[in-house]
Length: 197
Image (cartoon, rainbow, N blue to C red; front, side, top):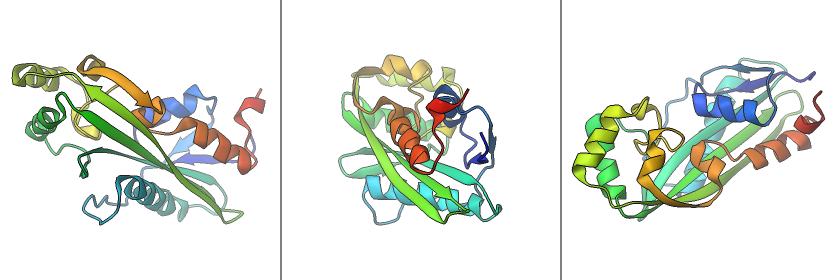
């Protein structure tokens, strides 16, 4: 692969998703952009905006590269939920999600610095939470790894899988990136993952 790829995220889930679809040779640079979850935007537009701001911040450090930014948001009844500040907030969020169908949107931004091209899009999935008791939620939050590093205070690809009854839509957007849209975006910019040897 001749193009330098930069992932503007320290998220282990996003790193794993890039590797899963065949991107092995990429760098990770965390963005210094500070998320503002109070902006007056829909969940989809906010996820796209934050993903783009993160990618743009990292892109400033390079002359030639393709930078990938991502941001995930949980939403329920018109309210947006980001990362939990602490375990108590994670418990409160999960109490709200109990028995409900919760939306998960992941924004994706790809910036081709050399050519000045940018692709900004998103994917959406839905989680039907089981009815959860407070005791069960508290036990989960105590046991889960990296609970504060994920939107909504739960990790669907870890122990959080047992909280869910069913999934609709784009599973990978629930995990952290709409990978099909990432693949198609990179292909549009001349990087065809499936042609890598």
